[in-house]
Amino acid sequence: MDDEERRALAAWIAEQAGAQSCEILEARQLSGGAIQENWLIQVELQEAGARRRLDFVLRADAPSGVASSRSRAEEFALLEAARGAGVAAPEPYWLASATGPLGRPFYVMSRAEGVALGSKVVRDESLGGDRRALAERLGRELARIHSIRPPREDLAFLGPAPQDPAAAFIASYRQHLDELGQPRPALEWALRWLERHQLPPPADITLLHNDFRTGNYMVDEEGLTAILDWEFAGWGDPAADIGWFCAACWRFSRPDLEAGGIAAREDFYRGYEAASGQRIEAERVHYWEVAAHVRWGVIALQQGRRHWSGAEQSLELALTGRIAAELDLAALEMTAPEGRAGAGDADRSSGPPLSIAERPDGQELLTEARRLLRGEIMPQLRGDLRYKAAMIGNAMGIAARELEAAARADEPAAVETLAAAIRQGDHDESAELHRLLCQDARSRTALANPAALEQHPKGR
Image (tube, rainbow, N blue to C red; front, side, top):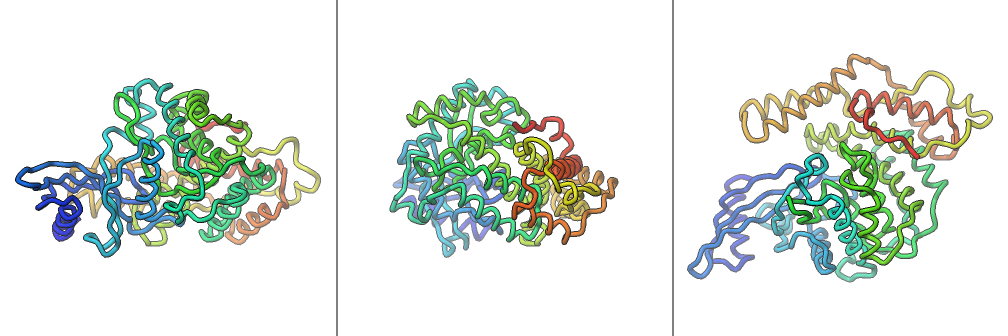
């Protein structure tokens, strides 16, 4: 944020707060927020002869985004609705449009104290207080979110509620894959499984947070302080939020703790059922856990594309794109066929092992790592150095392993043909193709994140 933006923002805050003047003492971009930008804004307001210091968080549009992300005005309305339902969400104060002081949409909300970084929350047991109580509290918070039901005039921008959320999910994520232009046979396999095992619509359609997980709530030493990041909210099956929270991909270093890496699933369920008065259906949650890995896989690919398309060069986005391999593997392990491959399957799926190209590739990662090192870190050698240095080491490790392996990827046309055939149902229950897909996903995961193979949960 340059000096001109700071002056314009200070004048705008003074006007919104009804103050005589406003001085911005600090404007610092916060870590996290890979899809949007979050800024800590410390101000001093001059009001009727007295001076008052306040801390806010300013949430603004990033240079590029993902297709399903809500606008800042929509997020603002969602925060108002959530707080009206008793959810521990930050308080939204003021909203600015693209014609406002920063030239892009943003809103200002209260600052919550604590830590949100998922890996740290899971690892540091001094955070969050009693972990069983924390999981139960999170279950109650989610139930409050689900108490918001359509129709709601203040949430009209969410559109009509889907009559069949599962069918809508499958259609939407197939469309996302088509728009990405990156054939992903493993995700096509999982989407086909969701289609073949589709459950009837839920009894109730509710508001979904759609990113309710460890990493998107804040805790201090005592417990929960805020539910964050409402940019994906929409109407749907409440079990989808439960499946997302419990999905293996959001347990970080504790795959054994099925409630977000912090507690047993039963602790989370207990809080939800007590607050909602509804019994949780295990089969329905399992279905949405499979969907969670598909969804996060697609989002990871979208994030990677933001980098390699040139829309927003970022090593963090590039590395996020490479998470897709382990998400492919998780989705495959949860959807393994029962029994052996059927007659005729061997002709379709036999042959050399699959080798699907990833994007960004190792050379692109090395290029971006060098750009970050030379263009940002070396001139500063302070502040964010430790975090960026860790990302550089990660990227260079990926690139080195990938180049050493020197695996030749299948021709794009062949991979695209295979993905299309899976979508059409040509390989349903093919144990041999499933084996090859798993083998390929494991190989790509070994290049991108070898540690994930050690902790990777097996499918049920």
